[in-house]
Image (tube, rainbow, N blue to C red):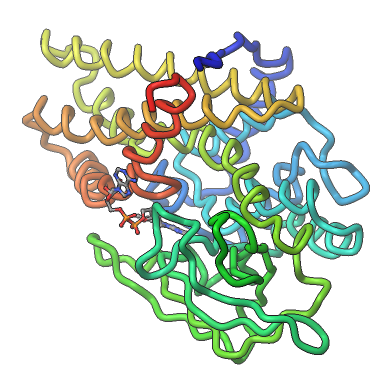
Length: 377
Ligand SMILES: Cc1cc2nc3c(=O)[nH]c(=O)nc-3n(C[C@H](O)[C@H](O)[C@H](O)COP(=O)(O)OP(=O)(O)OC[C@H]3O[C@@H](n4cnc5c(N)ncnc54)[C@H](O)[C@@H]3O)c2cc1C
């Protein structure tokens, strides 16, 4: 039965232009002139840069002040994240903790967990990884095999997670694990635990990506003891909690801005005198971008109202990933281009673009989510 997908129009707040300027001024000051901007949120990380953002109050912007948050709106947060990505800033270190792990703890964590982790996250001192995928378990997340068994003092964790972005640099991982044996209800019996990535029984092995960078890892757990107070929410409620993270994970501007610097360099390259094909391409790409922004801002507005727009978020990600994957392909054909700066930006993007439609859920999976909502499956 068709439930409806609704992108309610949302307007950015009156202070948005001033906030944008503030972020731009900050980036001009904070980033060295030799820094090569990259709009892919996963491309660059700097603990020093994250700490500076924390001092500005731009991490945990929407969280309560008692946990170090800024008590600002999701729409103000949208403005800051969009500007940071458009400027190609190295946001990777704190990104997951700010976008996902912190909101998870705010919603499901204990008071003790909130008081311990959230102020550290907002200061840009405490970074998190996502521990969902496992070898042989990506899209079919319910088939995870890592187990945490109850023991004196907590849970005994064994198993492995894969493609764990930033685990070699981060402090903690929120992992989905089995705390009960599988049953007929595939989604029952899973829990989320916070794993200290510096635990001696945790081994982290880097995996090189297509470009030769080491962004992600396989993480092994061999008899890791997780204290009781590091289980998030109710034991067995992990699946519901993971699902509730998805609107945060899938709807932000990072889902359509990964190739934005290619577009910037393309416009710079053709200058004031593009040929007809180049002008048409710029028009096409910008019109898509403007529409995606409206959709993403709408989701930020719904989050602000306390709604859980999972399907709208899936739609933003699906269309946004399609767009960001197309940008380097279409721009590549609109040359020839001569500047080294342009070539570097384009080549780097082409090597990373295959990941855009995989991370955070593949296109086929997102289309399945959307089709279900439309009553088509
Ligand atoms: C750059 C990058 C960073 C990542 N970071 C993290 C991270 O930090 N933490 C984490 O947990 N994971 C991370 N991932 C993993 C990512 O979430 C998975 O790669 C993704 O969910 C797909 O899982 P898989 O790779 O096992 O592919 P599979 O699930 O094996 O899928 C293979 C192909 O089959 C298709 N397919 C699978 N099932 C279906 C179906 N039911 N219907 C139709 N088609 C289907 C898929 O769409 C895909 O095309 C990252 C991935 C990348 C590329």
